[in-house]
Image (cartoon, rainbow, N blue to C red; front, side):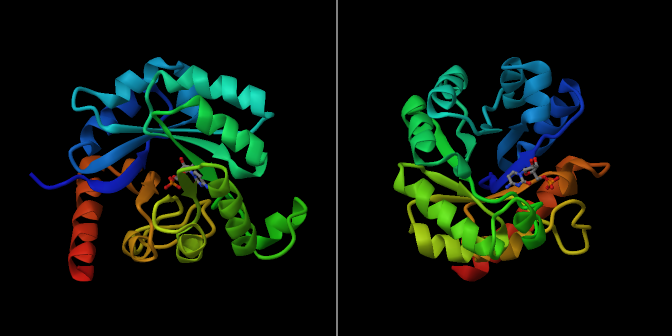
Length: 235
Ligand code: C5P
């Protein structure tokens, strides 16, 4: 039995049945499934048991919380009982907010989202964050880790710089992953799974390249096998 690959499959499905089906198809090959806002807001906490299935794959709850510390603490407590392996908050919410989340969920890794991988430098300019995305990412990663955060979400293109900033003990999670030949879609700062891993990512978030094809199980198995070959080479 081979180890599941360090991939979190984004279950961005329109309904619970589809999400549960995708989860059961990919679970033999990947370590984690990711539940995002669409599914969670439509179905609530029950969605977690549905996608976790009998074999208890890790659940990544991607709610990207961003509010005042007391509200984020309350929201984090509300979902901590579901025991997600990861829960996301926006690093831009600041240190007190991140600390509130960390304290509210002792059995969950709080993952700080730095800059969404869909944003380009010009988009950041438009929201008043001057300078290249990579600067904002490093600054936000350093701030998050300073406040007890255990995981950081960034694009694979910044993974090496963030790793240098935060050290080896932090879990680096990278969306914006596109296998060779697959369209970027709305992602702007992308890399292949092999390159993301080589840049220092610990967990790759992959959605539509797996869930958008006819056979999500086969797509997950193919990417997992490619990653095993890469990490074999690096050893
Ligand atoms: O389909 P795709 O591979 O683009 O899915 C990427 C997933 O990662 C989506 O669920 C998206 O919400 C999430 N994500 C992201 N950028 C971040 C954090 C999470 O794309 N910075």
